[in-house]
Image 1 (spheres, rainbow over the protein chains, first blue to last red):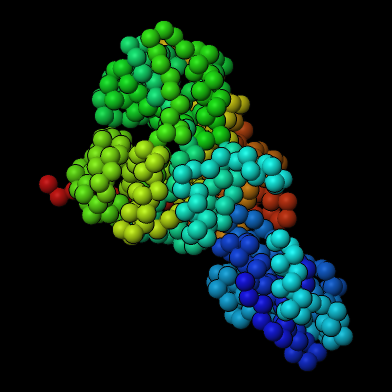
Image 2: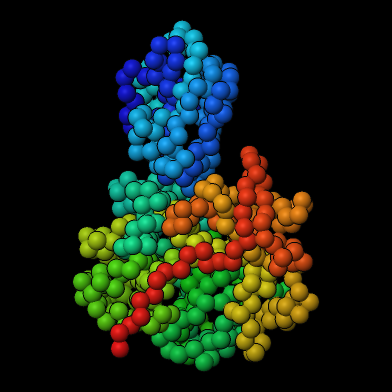
Length: 129
Length: 369
């Protein structure tokens, strides 16, 4: 189970990577393992304003459907177009090519309240224990 | 699941091997079973293109023997057993008097006095109890589920793999035929049957030998496959799953399977099945192809002409097809005319077309004579 340094994580297993006042969002390696083979991604609407905790995408695997939540408030400025044809990218590269959406106009300070990778790994250990 | 519930789950002789292989384990029919190893899609694809092996020890295996065995089974099971040849098996149902399906099963005929009945995991206890209540003289019923292990070897390379393990003659075993063989030096009962729509075999061996056989099959190139892809494979192939397409609330007529319950000899539930076929059932099972990858799930309402006409029985993404498929019970008056429908998944409305199963058919190579 890996969780790269430099990202922030939520208790719903999203990750977020800041790039100035915008950020990229995806789901963690733990989440994609738990979901199993992903067969479909329902992307959020590009341009939509979301509050922290709003649904920004739905991920469907062979066995279940799961929602992805905005780790911070912002505006969905891009969705990963590759996922409609290659949903397995989320399994294969959850932190890279399997990114889910980009949020603009975020509050950088809000990111600091999220778990860093050390805290997230500890959180996972407690969840599974 | 509560710890004591988890501990009370039954385990097959291979459970430790699955956990060692990193399988994700789930509860099924009261057993702790592998859902997947490498991943459902990879295991599904490997079954259709190469060869995989499934632990199916959770299914029930019941021997029915004695002078009265043929009469007993002929009167209680829907499939014709008197003219079934020794060394052949046949699919059918155990019905209630009212025609409701207690289970779907396969009966293996060794001879007129020895039969093996293979039933589903979650229904085995119910089936066994029913057989014992209706038992007649000169019939012995033995639950061999614990003593006899079962592994399913499935995929186009099954024959080659078994030839490599000392059983090349199994290539000539007819579909729904079975024989006692030696595979990898172990005595086994092998039938040319399966639940995937591919060529393959079900292999029965002493429980004590199961782990050894499993390891030989794996090291010969069979990929381990779990319940996850077992479900996607059987759905694509148009095979029913008890509890979804089959249940005590319906007869074989609703499920479109009355041909497996149509012998002229009397059997439990025969009159009810004939009456239902004559009067017409209130619902019929239909297949659905979705326009995309999103899937519907069991219980989702099916809408046609602006109103709900039925419910999904099974639904899943179909890896071999690239879109999702489903089965649904549709009100009988509408079933024939069904074309474009909408399914309400609770999150969204999905578009689908009526399409009768099987959704996938394997290529059958012509035998060169």
